[in-house]
Length: 161
Image 1 (cartoon, rainbow, N blue to C red):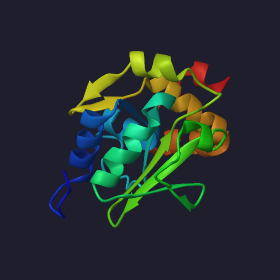
Image 2: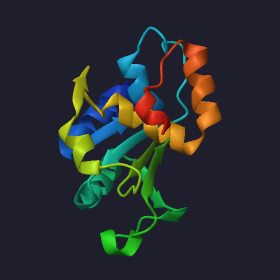
Image 3: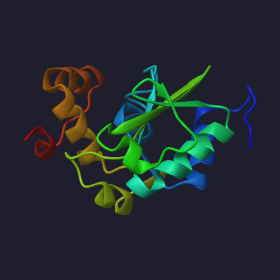
């Protein structure tokens, strides 16, 4: 189902989640879990987590919404399968008003556990909060701590190991 300009980012993400199992992670997920603290935070992109076997379905669903899908800057090729992009960790789906990074392999977390522990908020599948903080911490501990302090949020101790 192609999206119109009146379709919100959340609506588009819900459509993707109906087509393929995904888990919203990153700041977009924290924004759903802490709406008052992050109400004015402007998201540059959305991050989702996929089981590896869902990659093809995600690509097809994103393209059906008119999003361009790339993997490490290369346009997604029709014949590509998981084996062709192994080791690249994520694909990017972009449009004029939407940017999604979809991670399909991550050695830092248990992807299956993230899917099993999903929490639905406003019709969106949200990953477990400690795991979201852990990923932010791994990426940049100082920036993660600054972000949490700026918005009055607490990073779980587990995430800081």
